[in-house]
Image (spheres, rainbow, N blue to C red):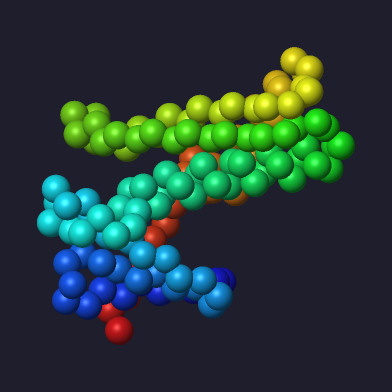
Length: 130
């Protein structure tokens, strides 16, 4: 299992997130008391879905030799407190010389990206205090 480490000091609410080889900053917007130095945590979740979708579609089109020149994925999200749900809408734009069958297949493949699978299946989180 890959480890991701988040570390926050006293600077509101700047958080450094590290993997073995990369570092990103997460923060809250100024309206929430942060400095807006990076993606907010909910934006990181949405960006994971957007990036994974684009990468999955690129990989599939490359394997098939299809003329997909660009993929744009826009993910929007909102919290519905009445239904106690987090709603995600994903819009995909495919550019290139693709017929209707290829586009339809790519839409099916988008739902097979690993992050989509994680978000649409039960998730178990175990928390320990060390």
